[in-house]
Image (cartoon, rainbow, N blue to C red; front, side):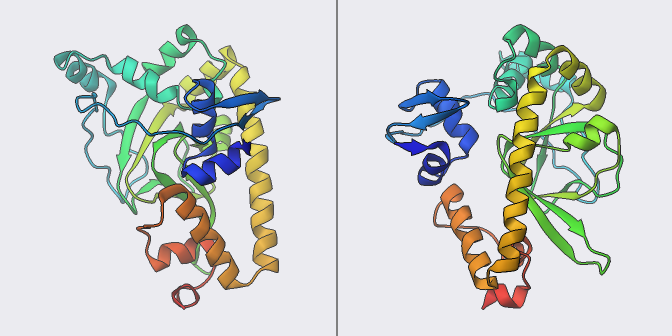
Length: 274
């Protein structure tokens, strides 16, 4: 038997993905409290159908904050021409997020109609520290780095966010500026929900707040553990831990530069290279 964390590490998937597979019966598992126990790791990834509908997105401006690159109206027309329905596609994207587990199709449908999908390439900025928050964001695919700028001008990575996770929660709730800069690590698809639409949806579906609170508490614990590691472990140990974590998600072939690894671990480029 395996915990969701252990199963995620062995299969190279996120814990949310493992939970989704368990809920859908695609992997042998048993419910235990609020989580799952994985009974068997026998899971074969299914290839996507060759003709699965995928909206075409333009590239985001790397020097700007999040900019709409695919308007709903345009995508609806494309979907109609290809005999597909964009809201259904958006619904499928939203369903991969754990926070919507207890939300019915009828309740989620109005939100799916308001989602805007953004595509970012490696190194592009999604939201910049100090910019006004106008939306709440969900990572459909890819990975982002959350970074702060020190008074000395150095960029320090404080967290990593992966597909199936959200970011920008507190700025979206309180309407305050972003307190950190988020940067795409590789090709990343982000679902944006306008702040007002998100708050209105949350008022009608309070179950999402409990799930997000649970995830935020875990994140705070992760940050606490990370700072403990920075204090107690050597630079080489921290680099090793980051590499192991990345390999568990992306396999043994990684496409990260030495500088990106250095940013993730909080050590200098020279130390990472050694």
